[in-house]
Image (cartoon, rainbow, N blue to C red; front, side, top):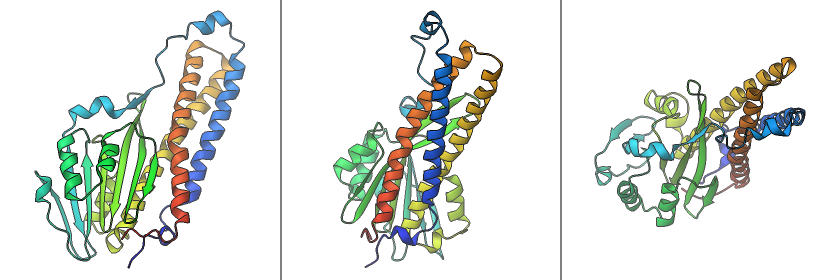
Length: 285
């Protein structure tokens, strides 16, 4: 009987999560220091900030209705590979022996399709409800033969100067992995290309290696966003050396809100990874 053993999968480095949380903590301290300096502003000047819009963080809820729900299906092992899109969930063929199946679903607002997918792969109705409820907190549920992870995808839009947040869910059972993304901004494309081109270890490994590769990709994205925020903080440092303006004040408060939101996304994932690494033999396969 095979086991899901996190210690067998070296791709995810726990210190990268620690680095992300440490960087985020240092940035918050830096922003707090700036906020203390800004207390020299008069109350009248600060009162003009009341009623300003929240920080430039965009959740994907308003974008969902414009996205066509589109499941992409990958069947693979070391020797063979098949990629397909199916008009009907019921048309997805049965998985063969020694074959892995990854279904990547873009868009979760089509209740009928998500429900039929749940029936097709025996996903518990409560899990289906969690997939469709995109305001979920980051969490991990480990059952006797399944694993369900809800996380947050964070990526910047440099042109619009906005940070996008979307929920992503993972359902892992036996040799099947189903992922649910809210939008078509697919950061998993590099991993899909590795499967197509048979590069790396994914097609030589069990489905849990793909799961960790995808989680690792999310962590990479966290680090990229932290780098961008760090650059903004450095820019504020230089601005404060010259002058103190209302624009700088607004930027600092926006960054503080953004960092606090970011902390709520990173910290639970850190605990989840710790939990997975302590589960030496979590049987899901």
